[in-house]
Length: 208
Image (cartoon, rainbow, N blue to C red; front, side):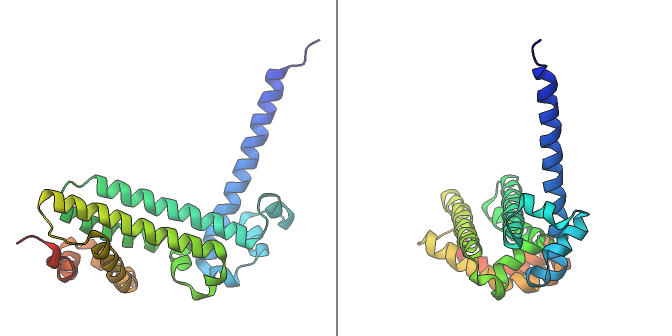
C-alpha cells in the first residue's frame, strides 16, 4: 500500500504554520516588551512570559536576546521604508514629496519605538548589527531625498548645484528636528504648521 503523501504533506503544512505562528507570537511579545522597558532592561524571561511560552521555546527560534531584537529592528526598519515609499509615491509635486517624507518619517518613527531607539540609544552602539542598520538607514535617507531633489530640479522647482551635499545637509537638519517633532507629535497633524517650520530649511533650494 502506498503511503498517503497528501496526508503527510498536510501534517507538515500544519506543523509549519504552528511553528510560524509561535515565532510571530514571540516577536510580537518581544516588540512590546522592548518598546516598554528598552533593550537593556528586558530579559528573555520577560519575553517568554509575555509570549506565554517557556524559555526553552524562545531558544528554539532565536539564539539570544540580541537575535530577537535584531529581528524586530530590521522588521520595523522595513515598515518605515515601505510607509515612506508609499506616501511619496502618492505625491507628484517635488516640494510636496519632501514635506510628505518629513511628516511620514516622524509619524511612523514615533510608533516604531525599537527602531527609533536603535538609531539613537548610545548603549546599543557596540552591537555590530546596530552599526550596520544605522549606516544603511542613513544611506537610504540620503538617496531618497536625493531622488526627490533631482525630481525637483528636473521639473524646475528646485535650483541645486550639488544634490549629494544638499541631501546630506537636509538629513542632518532633520535629525536635529527629529526628537522635538516626535515628542510634539500634534505639530505633525497640522501640515501648514510643519510647512512653516521647514520653510527656512527648504526655501533656499526653491526656484524664485
